[in-house]
Image (cartoon, rainbow, N blue to C red; front, side, top):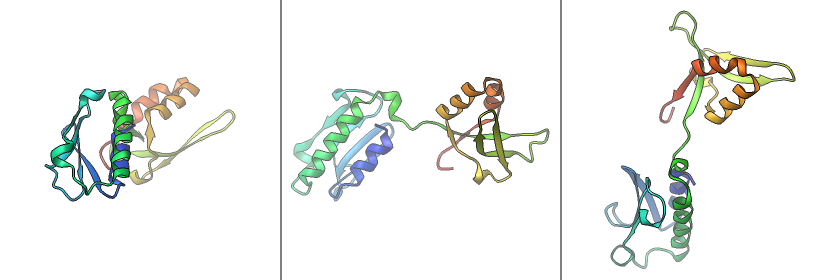
Length: 161
């Protein structure tokens, strides 16, 4: 399970919320401040040793039992996920840069046919298709001669672009 997915599940409950800060997920009642967590999970560790829980002092009757059950299910899935699989995959766009770097073109679509591979280009960065590494590897496997070009065109998409 990805960290963002775990946050979404927990924050969808009515009485519990979670946030990540500096490699640690903090889980607390929605009505309490961020400092009053009842569970803390180190995201760079696996197994139950990654969890610190303080149910006695920071958890009261305001937490719905079903919400707590959902949190425990999500936590179980998260800690059973290998650490390197918890984080979001890097995403890329393919950029065609000609002699002048002032006018890059972006791959907006790839059309595959029986014996062809066509790249649609756009001048607008917002129209660029976003790829994960696996998709680019599939293209490189299908067309090995394009592998060096794809590697050269790859540009990582940062943050919320």
